[in-house]
Picture (cartoon, rainbow, N blue to C red):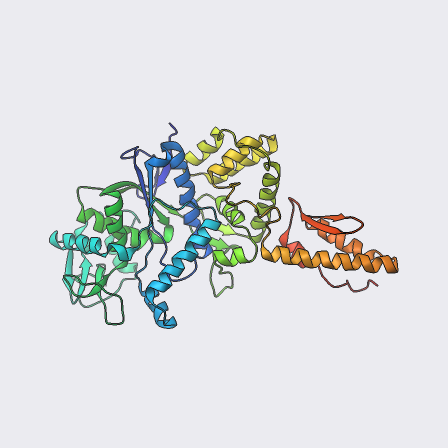
Length: 468
């Protein structure tokens, strides 16, 4: 059996993955808070852990891997969105979950085994909080319940911080009912305008961290194999998950292996609305960028390194995928190349796996190329079509306009005997990777493997100045 090695954030070492039960390898990944569209940074962990899910299923068997990713559908951001729009909270969360599924499906991400919604597990959260209070790890105060951070001696181990350093530098909520500044909320009161549930501490709602601990315990047990998420969740969210889970269920160890993907930048800068470089996955899809291309670019950087989204990478990725799809169009997948499996088994080294695919393409081993690509979610039937006549609407619209302009230019040239405008358009289209097929009665434009969307969009539709 393939040996998988993963860098455990908790130990900061690359370790051999040794499942607690090889017949049921269990993984939990923190999912989205559902109040708005997922941005590109949100998509990175989805793609990263989708590849790990695919690898685990390949090694241990499809029926022997359980992947849980939650939806946080109770949160103050959701409450604020409801207040702004006047819409019911459930309508907002249902709609946003639908958007999320559509967008992540477009990236070729498999649906997890289970996708629990936090609001469906309130009872489990209350039960876990009661256990923490009974064990002296939590206390009720003014309608709140708080976790005693100092009651868990290993607090800070995941993020590598000491409690004293956290007090000096961390952003913590200061409240008079806290015994210690670092204590965090497990339950908080709700007013009449805020969602709430009956509890031993009054009507209220759960804090952010308790939901993942409760759902992970109910669905995966007191101990499971892998917990993942973005690096931004390592502290305080994951640190707090460990503390409350291990205190509520000391018979278990919560997650054995912790994986964190690094953050995403755009053109070398942090993605930010103020910088004008913030966009959602849907923004990119609506611009005509295929989901498969987005996936390709995301996999080009190791999950443990910051990922820089650039337009050049997007163009190169699209050109590569066009070539691969054209060459494998009538090919059946063969055996998955061992070199691709070995790359993924070595701490999910997707850049090396991609390099192996490039080598297979260069060697002309197309059945192996197709099999290896499909292991990481590329060249699948579900993501196909965009490279043929299934171009995005923006591409189709522009090509139709250019085709009409070329037809008109040729008609004009037949009268004037001046074919300079026709030649200009043909040259510009060829330079943008578009094949121009001209017959006596028709003109057809066909995107080729080197199709360049930006260059196509930049071709003027009007006659160039200086030409007759």
